[in-house]
Image (cartoon, rainbow, N blue to C red; front, side, top):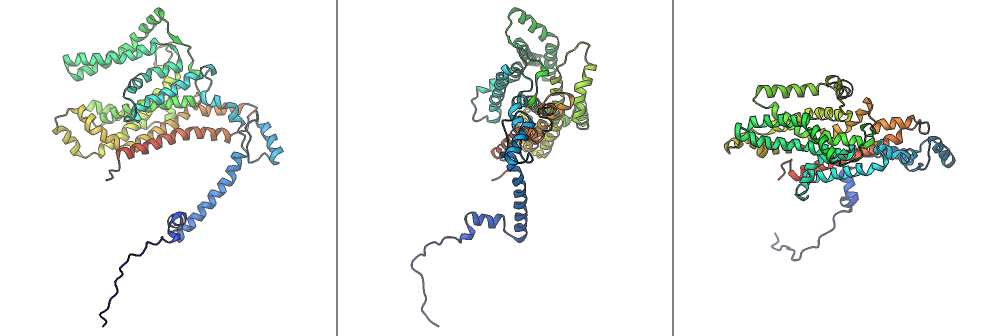
Length: 435
């Protein structure tokens, strides 16, 4: 046996990895062609995508934007390509895009709709991006529920101010009565005082102030609302109001008070058992039967109420799932700190339940926003209803795909934005509990 050995005294330089394992080639081998089955599925999928794009891209880009009728589009296509088949006539979108967005709203008042949309984004900023938005913007958020209807419907400024005064009545009524008779009596009395103010006093006060000092903007009737603006209006109101109402219903369903629990369970189960279109027909046709004669209850307001109630029932069940997912120790921890019921819900229970429920809540938001298209069935000219009216025009009779593609893009932008914000919020709150 030899007593000699070899020991390397210098370090060899690092070698580059094999070219087949890095870069685009390595990525494709790992993700697309890692096995025989994966390779077959990749080839079939690429073939399917090529088949779709081969028909879709020429239809989108070999198109006509300047035509004023479908007949003119077909003449241009025959002259350019020898056939009118397989080409989009975007002239209908170019001709009617303002109507699809604003409905029959007066064109010289479009600035009010645009301003309302800007205020919507600004009012949402303190809620969606609380750590980045200035704290003073919360005052705009508080004023937005009264500013937005005034901008869209117009009329006297005293109406929204008197409506906002109802919440001031509730606030000071609660503080005053609570000091005398306790929080429960204070809550009941203050809410009743607010309802009495809105139903019997606010209108008279607003009329009196208007007769003394008339400040307002041009009024616009509800029947002129339409297009994508109507879908946004219904969606924003239904989403904004259904979340707090759903939280109250979810808490009420878990309440130990028998009457409160029975009312909440009955409401949730009834609404979930009835199709939304049925509720919309009730709002459109039957609700006036139960109101005093001569009552003029705005159709858009009726639809807003029904869509909010419908969304709140589903929201309550989503939040109840989040509450049920919390361990019992969280409730016991809140009790050990000496917190009362509302303090425990606000500081410990509800933040965790809402964090767990984010995917379900956003799914409900997206669902109710897309359901706004159902209002076309009860005669409101939302973007779907307007597309039907446009196709009834002799100039555009026979056109389908271009209008529906434009509508799909509008809804996709809003729904995809909500979905992306949901993912951002989940990463921010680490709902997956990653370490």
